[in-house]
Image (tube, rainbow, N blue to C red):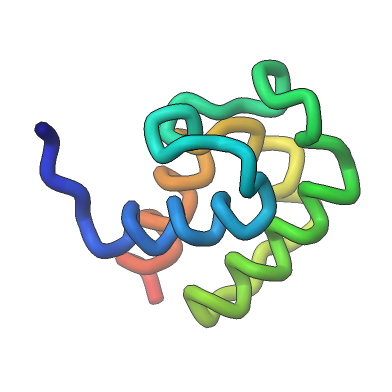
Length: 83
């Protein structure tokens, strides 16, 4: 079993809020092309939850790059390191 960082576990919890039908394993492999319910409304909800949970701001021009769990995780790690 892989150990998760605190950031990754918190991110999984954020995804669970937006996509409650996904398992933890499905969440870590999730992308906007693999999750049928990942639409624009889900994205707005996810961004709002991420901003609140991690006390960050995600600019609208960044949204188009946040299309998978892994890319969101990388983006958060970059924002947290530079905060």
